[in-house]
Length: 294
Length: 177
Image 1 (cartoon, each protein chain N blue to C red):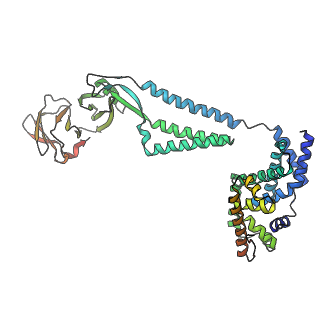
Image 2 (tube, helix red, strand yellow):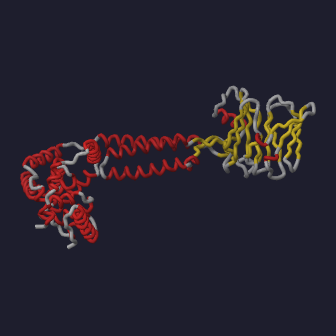
Image 3 (spheres, each protein chain N blue to C red):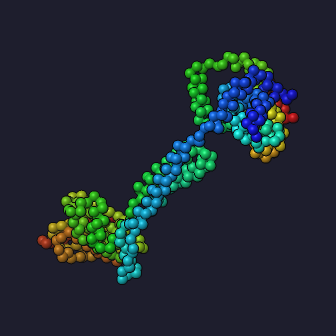
């Protein structure tokens, strides 16, 4: 006899598959014929999967509700669009990528588990997938397109500003940029909308407390946009870029946006914006630390 | 097939293979109660699929395959891992060895069996099927769904590992013949 077989038989000679074990086997066979298949995980899996599918469908449907038709204006260069659409660009962020990959792996595992009839694991996978996708869908925001001042105001009201007290000071459109300037109880805000090929979409939001604001330097189109506060006494603005000096007359003392085209790209460190008041006094209105390069 | 016939077939299979399957399962799980459970489950599965078997050799192959699969499933189960953790914790707490085990290990056969028990599962599979269950290499390849050459390699390594383990404990065995 083989030495290994002999050794195992010798060492385990006391161990027998006893008559009691025979009886237990028959009992198990009788139980298995009577036993009902566990329905709970199957039912739960079906219900939860249904919820997942409905949730995804609703998410897509929501997208359809908010997308609106785009309308072309005279200029084919910058077509106008209004309304808000889901902004999926957030999915390109690293953690979102991780979430998507994890969901894909879990989905594959859920299929595998389903094939192997591990229904509790299927259920667990689906719950985790729902949690991940739910969390991700919460982070998918809207891309807001504006066509006019009223729509800019509506967009601003989506933020922390109260619709009854927010005051639009002015809007300005320079090529692919549309800028809205507004204030509310000592707070100033500037919303920058950039053309994305479909329309002017909200891209940047600058808020300032108290009676201050920042000037915006639009680097790619060589423009500087200067916000003036309400009840100012400025008669003229002097923009000193180091290479050139531009003067711009201010025709009212209301809060407003003033755009100044520049000849070429400048270094903001050399940029100084002076204000000349009614009495002929000059003061520095914006220095390089208060100029936002966009 | 009538129920009485099935019962008779099962009783015969349990009498023929029950003890061997129990010993094989024990080498994997190291617990007689669990091993008995696994063997019972093996026979339950066999009972459910009994109509498919015509020859006794296929019954033996099937029973060993199911028993080994059951052992693998048990070893990868949460239940087993939990027991392992508890055992490890108890060992840490008591710092004592099992005296009964030490007495048994004093015997030559016990040394051999102990070294088989320590083998990694994939080597244990081929070693037990070849030497204990007396399957051919070809049958083992079919049973484990592995290429025959892999089975040969694993068997050779398993023998070497058993030999090495025994040599470490002062016992020469495990030539590659």
